[in-house]
Image 1: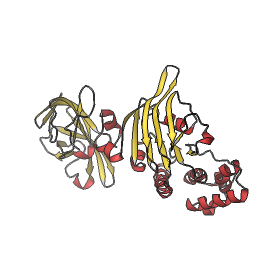
Image 2: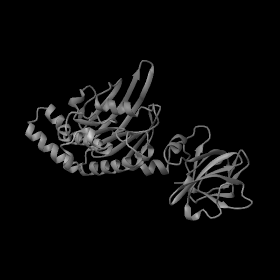
Image 3: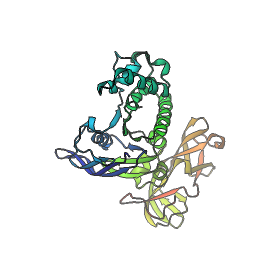
Image 4: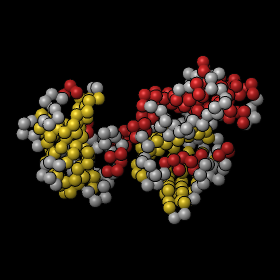
Length: 355
């Protein structure tokens, strides 16, 4: 079993706190993604788990072992880095086999296991090549293979796809997820890309300023963000956040614009959150808003709207763009159940908000 637990973990450099009171349990076999903006403590948390950073206070356990003070080699973890770190003078086979050779596994056995792993990753025909003869995606698979061949209790991934182009990134993350599902090894993955986090994880931990802002399944985090930070960070395009007053079903912005909403029992000053998919523009000559930009993305379009100085974003199916053109006047409505309410002062999600 490789359940991972962070218990009251803190990391400081002098008077600067990087990770504060991290309490987190990652179930055996889970794929957890730590996500957040630069400087939120996600990579530091991963490096503490790997043993590459010391823990200022608190404990980290893997299974039933306290690994807080153990050396990296004694933790039974394998890590895949952003820069692959392949040996340029070694072949694919030799790169994958390297951890086994370093641990004194007989050469024949190490190469046999390396060939098995290479075959499972679609690298079977490339085992004789050197890194310079591989694409970026193939190099990343070699790095993953080098981690797999060790048969560790835990996989750690530190932004492993950030050097790949968009197409390769999508292909490689699909392969990575399939590998993790097949092997069932507890995995922790760090990224600043919330789309990557949503796609890969079965548990998502959003970090901000060294603390957990929210954790849960990707859908839980997306549908019920704990505060305005999570609401704006998770989801692309980001959630529209509007300050105003709610009275009954009518939400009034400071600029006088009103929106009809349902499902929220809060009253008074609030921050209203609306996902772009839930904001519906309709062509109307007397509309109070104006379309300023349309970005076509195949089956859907991102529509930027100006409403009395407030800039809003809507996602619209291209088949429903009739009458919606740049410069056109539009009326705005919110889909049933599409409104989120946050406290205007604390920015925390209010009870009674939909979803």
